[in-house]
Length: 257
Image (tube, rainbow, N blue to C red; front, side):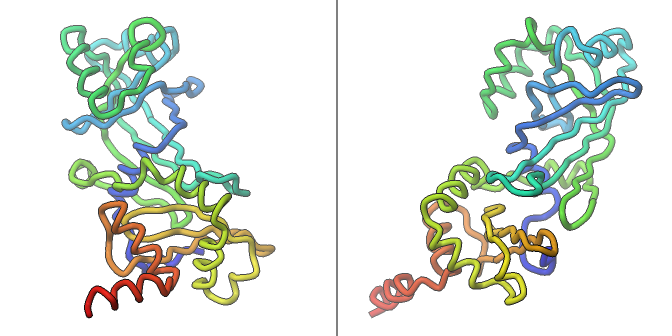
């Protein structure tokens, strides 16, 4: 169960964040087994730079196809930061046509990707990986709320959540060392859900998500902040307000006197 009416990121924002966080990515061509992708990065022109095994089927088929390219699907898996019964938070499927990156554009493309995502696998392009480009036809995300597509223009205009890089460490930290925070957030859940095991599921500028693992299944609930936040100071204050921390109210009161 997800409370879909609460404020949260747009579909495009969710996909951009998932693209940045996803540690598991596969490329699939018709009639071939999926292959693991070393690098996946959305470029400003609306295509994906994808590093695939240099001796794999995808690289071989794309080279053989020449200027015509080949149809392919890039699948990104966004896993929950904590070990849960159902660890996958969302799946993103990017369908399109894949081409080789011309040798004359190789260094410039690698520099662009490295500037935003200094993935060590980029150093293996040319030896372990071949760099390809996936021109996007469609993008679909599926999670607990269902499946939804997003237009390429909206995807390019959206930005990843400002906290997606720190989300995993932060949620693991509060789950292992600050269960009091989880317990206070759990007290905000609808009463029928308070009997299950509550674990942190997600964090973004709009609020906190909790996973309740109960006897009747899993339930995801978003606890929204009073307003979106953009920095760590705002995030810390928003969480304290969400918890009902009396210190925040007291601090505000002293500042206004």
